[in-house]
Image 1: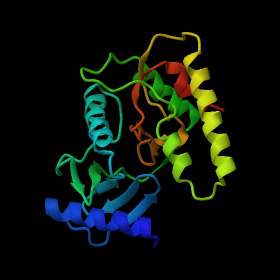
Image 2: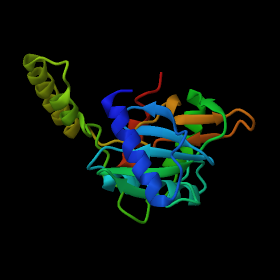
Image 3: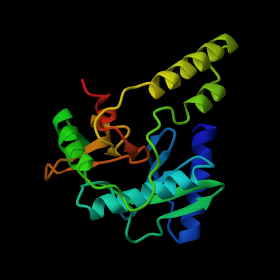
Image 4: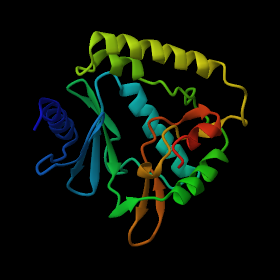
Length: 214
């Protein structure tokens, strides 16, 4: 296990201890920017990076609101405190989904139609920013030469300027921000589809949610 994976396991164990949960037998589901772990009792823990508490709280609040509005989404676990900070990392707790597969493009479209038709949330969700954390990723990437890094920074500035110059599009609404088939779960038994990974949900042009369409 890498040092980064071990760091998330330590944070997970500390968060579980704070809530009286057992982290024994925790299984990694996905170890990426957020580390996702399966716990006993149908609980899934998501370990974010240090400094992402506000984003984690917003995602939890959005998930509850979207569920209340009737949109099928992954939900915070009702029997566990939603979030704790352990080892400087926000750890949130979610319901485990039943066995499922990625959705289809048609599944994505159906869920986006519902999402884009919703009224604005009664709390701030932030503006759509397609460049979230891109600059930080360029800064910390250890496989880049300094020339590569400088080129990417210049290219990023060009893209940010072009984004500001885009013409007005459709009326703004709640957008997912990272809509693709991998962020839709289709449950094997029921065929029900659910929208996942709400971290990029924000207010913006609905066209953005079509960028992954093929």
